[in-house]
Image (cartoon, rainbow, N blue to C red):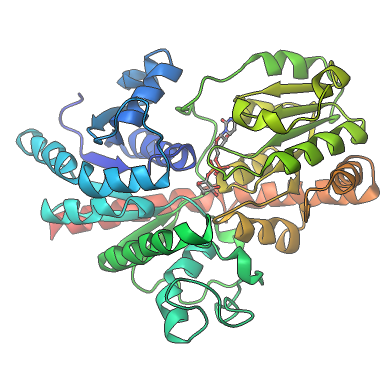
Length: 451
Ligand code: UDX
């Protein structure tokens, strides 16, 4: 370990879409601000990161981020879902994080703990250790505002105490928020029977985060027009979009063969399809419709489809699309999106994937599935107008959507808009503004330490 540098500890929620932006933040705090950045993961994640990266993750000279792991109480072979993770976070990880933080006391201590809001269990641990703590929201400001508005929505009778909307337009009291359908609220995830405990998770998160003085968001200034009341408590630092070009740890082995396949395709001809890393299964019937729509579009396609979802493919499908369609279980996504052969991206509207695609000037076909993806979709389709929404994912709709984006004149307009949005993301309101916000966070931290 590097002695003498201020030390900052990062606690992501244990899922790819959370580890990725937290890693980029840890990377920036190390390389731009000279911190010793330590990323803490539960054992089950740490083991997967090591397995998928040939053991290179722990080399501080490699990415500048040091990995630490703590016991999670999970057993080999156990199915690790939202509930198993919640149990590990509430019952096993807090005491181990506390020991880890205390172990640094003899070597200069820790200047700050940055906690993903979905890992809010760690806020109390940092507070007990009397270490400054900052919240981290890996997604867009719009979703944070919706979720932090939940207690208010319950008080106003817009949603009930289980999060179910009571009135039409439950979210419209939040200024600047594009309209969502009632079933698209970010906390309405999973089967009705599991919703109650998932919503309890959100209420616990909101309650624990009330004490936070600082909140860092992977969100950028241009993402919405309305910014009033943002500088109230907690103080908000919009440090997005975080750079996505540094190497990123992944939980699965990347199948690089798809880049060789892309090299053989014509410019802007390929449809890239991926639903990210943590999505409720869309079901065999939807997989079949999507498969048939891609086939009917007559475009080449690269589809990230896990083996668990392949049971939905129609019989004989792989033979029929041989040469034109490529299926992989996990792709080097940022390299794929960078590739000139990719013409559009059919996606679930995960926030990291959205940023990665816009940053690489790709137009989007949207099929949001859960969580914040519906909010992200409203921005992509209705506010920025850089994508088309697929309502039911039926084959005709997929075929038409692909052709509209890749052949029609609407595709050209969208391309111009996505390039303009890219400029915004990278310019004064985006990446450059983000650097200034990160500087402001480091200043706030220095002032806290002096108190
Ligand atoms: C989820 C939510 O969807 C997202 O909005 C929230 O901000 C974090 O939790 P996830 O479903 O994993 O995340 O989607 P996304 O945010 O898009 O992140 C997926 C990440 O995995 C991206 O960085 C993407 O590049 C990467 N990925 C995905 C790969 O590297 N290869 C793949 O084949 C698929």
